Image (cartoon, rainbow, N blue to C red; front, side, top):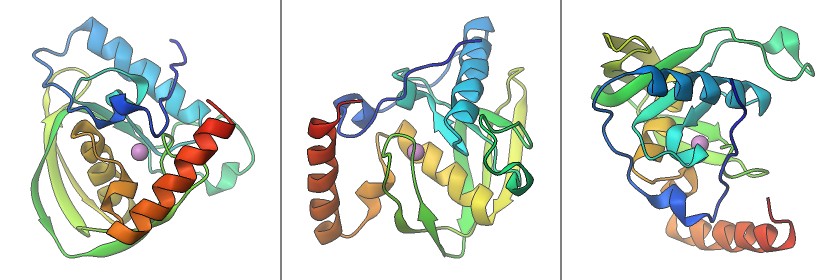
Amino acid sequence: MALLDILTYPDPRLKNRAETVASVDDSVRRLIDDMFETMYQAEGVGLAAPQVGVLKRVIVLDCGDRSGSEGIAPLPPVQPIAVVNPVVESSEGCVAWQEGCLSVPGYTDEVERSARVIVTGLNREGEPLSIEAEQLLAVCLQHEIDHLEGTLFVDRLSRLKQTMVKKRLKRKSVEAPA
Ligand code: NI
């Protein structure tokens, strides 16, 4: 396995739409494994392939409770989930969650999303999978699927807030290039 470089805002590659994976072969499995390793190392709960510069519809997440492992890096796997070609089949309710993103380091904000979703796709073996999720897992799935459309959580903030936040993030990226 290998650690991958995580692109950070305002890298224009984060705005691209990812392509459907035609078949889940060894190269896709290697990508999934590397993404998991990169995500745990960065202490994130989710990662989408475009964040590591790969325009494929692949996401990994682990929203398992790691409260017992606080301060120990990298985070251990608890509830690893990989989805290839994820699709939100149904969604309901509304929940506001304080979100962050490995591609937007040092900034979190509240975003409103569906409270419950059913997401379908393929697993690491290329078999169909269906996930019924709520709360953090539902939020995380929607956040990662957004990345496949080139959308960051900061794109979902109010127009006024976006202008403010994006200016701040751009300034930060000039001062300290990643
Ligand atoms: Ni993200």
